[in-house]
Image (tube, rainbow, N blue to C red; front, side, top):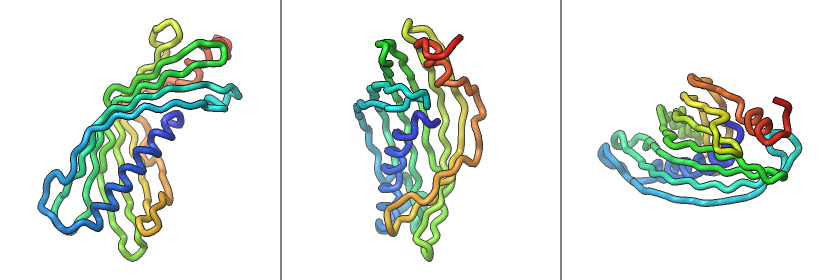
Amino acid sequence: MTRHHSIHTLLGTVFATAALLALVAPPASAGIIEKESFHDEFSGTNENFCDAGIAVDFEATVDGRYQVNSRGPGGPDYFLEKTTVVNVFTAPNGMTATDIQPNTIDKDLSLVDDPEAGTLTIVVLLTGGNRTYGNDGKLIAKNSGQVRFEIVYDYVNDVELSNELVFGSTGTNEDFCAAVLSDWGYLGT
């Protein structure tokens, strides 16, 4: 999950904004409040890829849709997102790896508002899978299953206070870093 931290942070920010808007919006009946599709492309360099001390360029494409659901008047609104993410990593030696997450679901399972503290505690389910293909296009690693995080968000100061894994992966957990670094020749096989 660490290689997706920046995407998770971006998605968490989108969620936190939607949750904050939902808390200050007038009461509504149960149903979909907002629904939208999105597309984003970005690139950069990870200066310490997989803690291996090498600078790796990446290009990412994220396509998805989200919706904010009301579960009734006066309560916080729930967030649901489905994304497809494609990351292409390029090593200093010119070799590439492509990581595809074709069907990731990010869904609020529970929301607890503490108005006295100005916080929202969110239990989030992340489910889906990814496949990583090496320089020759062959599958070198896969991960699937689900995890759950508990996020505490301070909506008064617009800051995430904590983000803790509360339920570990239920699926395959092949080592992305070891697979990619081995494929590129940076680790012995």
